[in-house]
Structures are given as structure tokens and as C-alpha cells.
Length: 210
Image 1 (cartoon, rainbow, N blue to C red):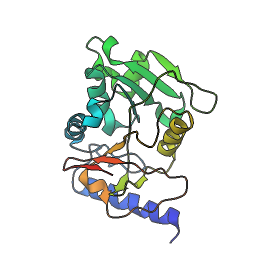
Image 2: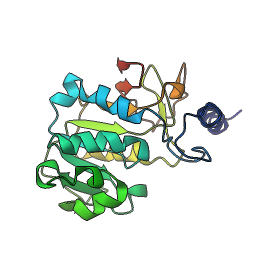
Image 3: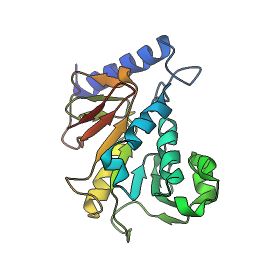
Image 4: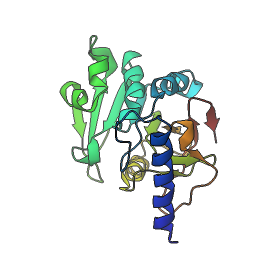
């Protein structure tokens, strides 16, 4: 079995378990997507209770549905939020929690983020930011206790993290977090050279710092 086939097998086993155990919020399961799992609001609250979160003023987050509660809490706490646009088609969206005036929940959705963002940043070498990022939150299909992660197979999460490193917006000490259902935590996930390891995992059961 090739590495690509092994990763696909891992994804399918996670999708199947979430669907068969009734833990996916999507009626037909999460196949081909970042899982939108039951309990994502609980996981976001656990993350918000960590020192890493409390010390963060600007949080970068993926646009996945399971991370809506994370984005909502960031905006509710008047943090700055940078959200990757779906498939990076429109780069990054910048939202300021202290300017939303009760629209935080709407702005935490993919559609609402476009309506309420203060500015857009391009993805890639030619774009620039004038702010530091204190925490990165990515969606995952699966992750192991060493921080090895797989997404849905398109590479967007790795590209986002690499882009932030290249721009010197994050460093080796920046919390690189994923929020997951316990079914998404595995003993081992194979890695490729371009894969970026996470250093914090939050599920409904625990907070793992690596």
C-alpha cells in the first residue's frame, strides 16, 4: 500500500466511524470534507480555557464548519480573527471582534465572514501582513498524539501554515492547534516531507500539548 493509499484508508475509517456512530452533523457523513462533528462547541470552550488562548490577541483559523465555535468565541472575546477563505480562493479574511456589535455569530460562518471582514490579505509570497499571529487553529480529518495530521487531501492546511511561517507571522513557539472529535485521534498517522506537525490537540475528552 502506498502512502497516499494509506492516508485514504485512514480518512475512510474516520469518516465511517463518525457516520456510523452518529457523531457527524452532516446527514450523509463527512466524506471528502473536514468532519463537522458533534461536540465542536464543547471543544471550543476547552480551547478557550487554555493559557495559550487567553494570551492570544490574533487567531488564525481554517474556514471549516467544525471550527465555527472557535471563530465565534474569538470574535465574542474581541480578538482579531484571520480566516482562510475556502480553498484559499480569496486569500485570508481579517475580522475585528470589537467592531462587530453583536454580529459575532453571523461573522463566524463562512458566508458571514465575507460580509463582516475589515480587509482581505492575499495568499502567497507577494502578500504582506502588519500584525502578529498568536495562535493557528486548523481543522483535521485525523491526528495522532505526536501532532501528525491529515486533512481532506487537498493540502490547504499545510499550505496555510507554511505561508504563515514564510511570512514570519508564526514561529516554532506559536500554538498550532486542531480541534477534533475523539474518534479523529489515532495512534499513528504517516507523514510526508511537506506535512507540518501540530503542537496542540483539543477534543471533547482532553487537551494534548506536544
